[in-house]
Image: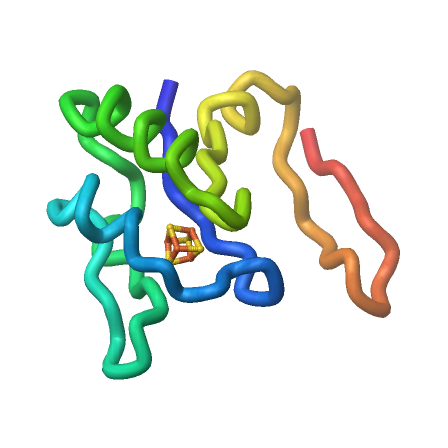
Length: 89
Ligand code: SF4
């Protein structure tokens, strides 16, 4: 199962704890807000990423599982904005 980080930019208050705890995947911009450097996290970063998510005081750092999509039958061909969603076999 793959995992990747996401930041809720509205909730994030720029504490920077995520970059301290997970420098392999998070750097801070010039204002102290996180920039995620990794797409899908390598397996060895899953545990440190969970620690960083738990340590975020604003609950703005999220860990998203991406493997679930691969188990769905067919593939998603539409968008959720403006056009109807469709599943193709
Ligand atoms: S620890 Fe949380 S609030 Fe602080 S910069 Fe990282 S994501 Fe934002």
